[in-house]
Each structure stands twice: as C-alpha cells, then as structure tokens.
Length: 185
Image 1 (cartoon, helix red, strand yellow):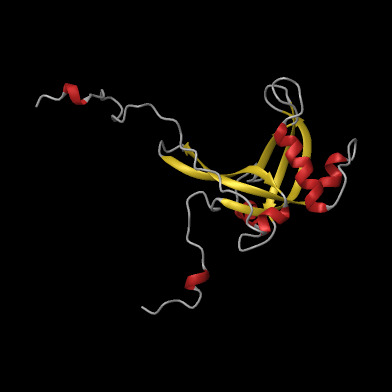
Image 2 (image 1 turned 90 degrees about the vertical axis):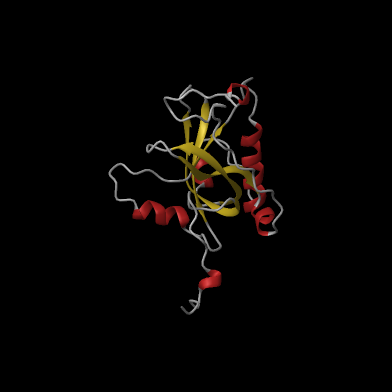
C-alpha cells in the first residue's frame, strides 16, 4: 500500500474526540443561570476558533441527528465560592476575556450579550466516565481559562487526566476480591 498524501497531517481518531491541550475558543452563547443547588453561574457555550480543530463542536452539533440535542461544549462557571465571595475561576474568566479582547467587562444588563462572539483561551483535559454500556470511556472537557496569547504562544500546561474513582476491588461483579494472604498456595 502506498502512503496517502495527507497521512502525516491527519490527526488520529481519539475517544472523546478533541485531544487535550490549549485552544483559542469563541464564546458561542453565554447566559446567566443557576446551578442545580441554586448558586449563580454562567453557562458558557464554546467552540474551537482556530487551528486544525476549528469548528469542532459546531461540526459535532450539526452531525447530531437526535431530537433535543444540546451544544456539546458547555463550561458551567460559578460566580461565587462556597463562602459567598467571588469565585477565582470566574475572576480568571473575566480577566482573561478582558486581556484577550482588549475590552472592559460590561457589568450589568449587557454582560452576556457583550461577551458573545469574543475569543478566550481554554485548556482542555480528559475525564473518565462510565458509559451506558457499563464500560469506562474518556471525554475531553474545558478546564482552565487562559488568554488567547497564552494559548498561541504555548504558555499553558495540559491538565492531567482525571480517571474515574473506582473501588479497590477489581473482581468482576458477583465475585469477592481476595488478597494475596487468602491464596491457597
């Protein structure tokens, strides 16, 4: 077989789709809402804006034929911490947004509408989850806010993988785990 012409430039297929790393993203939608426990938060819909994965989440959304489909990349950003103070990640979002777009934060009624369409840097990391098939899978999620310049200049650290916490027993369901001391030989 001859090597395809574009073989070296084509990314490998990865479970979870997007490889972990830093990306320049565009805010596709942003809205003020509340978490399930009633805490004030922003729901920020993101898409990759530039590079080989540009439009990654738009493509994923457009190819989804299910009814009631949802945007595939949402960052739920809490506004306050558990003590009622400004959440440090929210402050990072605002400051990185300011620096990336050369704007002042538009506090008030136009906060969300003024940030829609703006660019921000985001590092993405992998998280493990148990699928409906009972198997463990990986997905890539937005983790930390960065400036666009930090991403473009490679000034970020890729977050470590977050495996699903599992019981210490590796015995299949229905079997009891045994220790080395229980072995009959």
